[in-house]
Image (cartoon, helix red, strand yellow):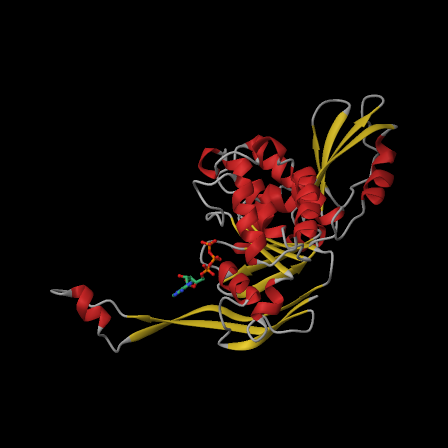
Length: 323
Ligand SMILES: Nc1ncnc2c1ncn2[C@@H]1O[C@H](COP(=O)(O)OP(=O)(O)OP(=O)(O)O)[C@@H](O)[C@H]1O
């Protein structure tokens, strides 16, 4: 269980001096400006949950993750992971945490993947039998076998990401923090990584906090989403509720068996657009109207043959939330 209680992080940045010897004068400056990267963020993440942590550039996502891992100290507030502070018990908690920063690798560039894993296993003091067992399990879940003997620099980006995920899981942590794990991957590699992440969560019961700018990652993987903007959490809940809260219409395409006949004096409380004589598109806010209510009302217009639901695009939802 991860608990973040009223987290704040303020960075103090030297003010850049203009003019001659700019670098040296900046280095010696006593003038600072404050950047409030995280302002009063609180959440609880129970074991086994897959949470998307999203927001625009500079919103404070990486800063939060760094506080959760114990790399940064909060200016105020507190993090506990399974009852312990990552700042005070860093060595102990490192064993329960796996971290992947998509833009960086923790593997040795010129060494075969397996050699990097062996170095990490000895750093984590993992015994040989436990290491072999874990490597076997991860090779299967992440499909690593084809490139275990390949030097890291020769891997495709998708393979490198799978190797990095495995590296972060060698010590079998229960929590995984992923910062942009699909960045730069092509469509196929993204799909593969998502399938692997789903398996890690469902089969190996890892609790995952995922930061990404790819809304398909969130849509396909996360049961819960926390949206942050300017260092503050502006939403914490399910995708479904988020869509509803923003009030974007769900579209239902309804096909009738015969040409549609509008009954006289029947004006349903949702927008209707005729597509052809037998098909219409109905826009309704799912917070206010259920699909069943729409279908009941529209059955007065003819016998319904088929219904197709189109949920609002998540990208659009987020665009509205960020404002
Ligand atoms: N070490 C640091 N020193 C000073 N300012 C920092 C530092 N790290 C982050 N910041 C600032 O804190 C704010 C939040 O940054 P952060 O990296 O947490 O955002 P982010 O949501 O992860 O953004 P992105 O999506 O671009 O990675 C930004 O204004 C950033 O410039």
